[in-house]
Amino acid sequence: NAGVTQTPKFRVLKTGQSMTLLCAQDMNHEYMYWYRQDPGMGLRLIHYSVGEGTTAKGEVPDGYNVSRLKKQNFLLGLESAAPSQTSVYFCASSPTSGRATDTQYFGPGTRLTVL
Amino acid sequence: GQNIDQPTEMTATEGAIVQINCTYQTSGFNGLFWYQQHAGEAPTFLSYNVLDGLEEKGRFSSFLSRSKGYSYLLLKELQMKDSASYLCASLDSNYQLIWGAGTKLIIKP
Image (cartoon, rainbow over all chains, first blue to last red; front, side, top):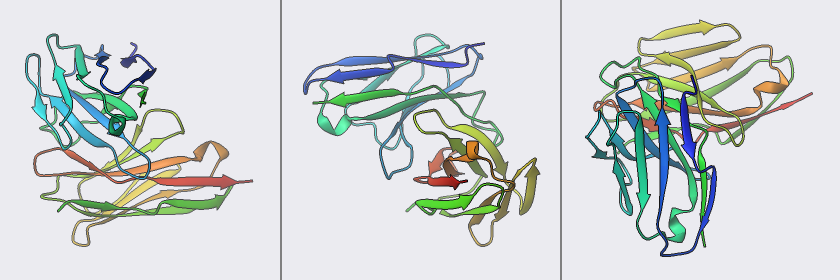
């Protein structure tokens, strides 16, 4: 099992460009999450999904869109990138979230720089 | 508001013991997680506490006091590979994780 994978690993964008980050998991997990991690701050939830075809906003959703067309994939889109979106993006998945003991499994991260 | 506080950085010596503290204020509480994150890598799960008391798992132990909104991670017999950031996260009433900024632990020989 590969666990949670993310593509690409690194990307440099110019302001105003768009891109899509892909997250894939092979653990048959229902829940998937997109976080961003910035220096000196905790992980912040951007969007999440509780199952195929569903998405919901997290703490910092502005400037991002997501889709979960297949259970194993969760896509994060930036329509018009801004320098404030320079960050490390982590995808995570968990079996459910209703049971408090469900652990989130993280992908390796995507390092995005917006110039 | 929701808030997780933990020290920014700590230094310890190989073979010693270190305690990393975490205080939390979240809307509702459904448990406290500790994750380890090596530089440039993904966070990985270390421990989960929902009841008061100490949970021991090998060289790592985690403690929770719900009345005080306080947890700590205890690392014994420190090894160089324990150099990493340690993230504290509280599961709130919506079962969302609220994360601290992490404690960078530096181990010296």
